[in-house]
Length: 428
Image (cartoon, rainbow, N blue to C red; front, side):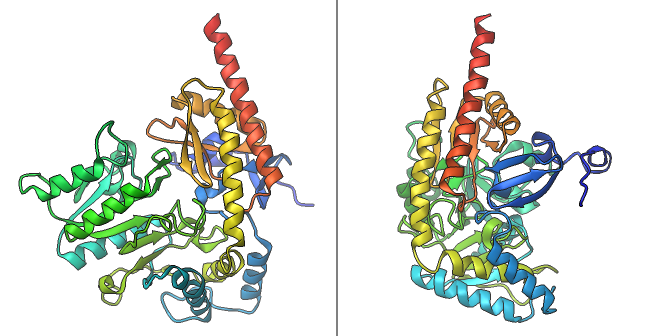
């Protein structure tokens, strides 16, 4: 019988103070299956975090796990730099057949280091090399990673402060509906069209269609389409960072599919491996595939094991439209459940899109209290937003409906208890 230690001393003694999620979910997790986590004391939790959308298909999908086990037992390649391998070839063929071709996309795939930030770094470098320009336009509340180039594109001051030096090469503009009464697209176009507008001609304009870390701000199709048109008008590449919003999270494989746009570059990571393993890639249209051999490289560009599980994920969930139709149903269930939570908090409102939704409860203090109570009651869920004021649901997309409803009921109960206690305190 396996005995798991519940002693957390080693973590506080030896793990860096940069650790974060474990502070809010203070237990020792030992196993996971589907949409459920188990800790060393045998407690189970419904997972509404999903590795921050890295586990869209749940924990330990049996088909992906079996394929990976077979890969290992047959002594297949474990590491291959960017050599040709049979597992990479299978992934490329599956991605072409089930993702690119049905969507009329001619993009080439560039495998980069295994993080989303590395994909963003590569995308920004591609734009700069392809255009000969240096400026990148990004948007308020955007989050693109914390390596130096990606960090410059990230709006959050706390994260940028961690750089220890100035970040350069980015102009930040207001996102859709960021400023009341301001047409963000028209403002962007006006400033770029004016020789005295103060914005250097951009190499690229980059955005998230739903700002995950920024508080689930969902851009309208009109905004995204308008930004693309501005990019075309001013000779800039149009980049969509689909790292958190992609792989089905907003209801379609890419978050921009129903917006009548065609990005020049798309970044993907998080759930692209299907199994929670490190993997990132950049989709780039052939005209902008400008890097020479190894000009952007990395020892772990192209995770061989992740190719195996990613291929299964694509063939299992995206070979037809069955899974996508299921997501539409779950999106409605989520919206209904979150509306019940919003009704408990004066002024609260829903944010996001698809299976990437949450409730803005007004303050980070209240959102954190609700999430903390959820954890006590068996639900793992986090906050997001410029003040962490949004209670954010990122449940695995494969979560069974009844378990999904159970998690939402825990959230509603937690919100009821926390808001009730605060009302009692206020009354005293």
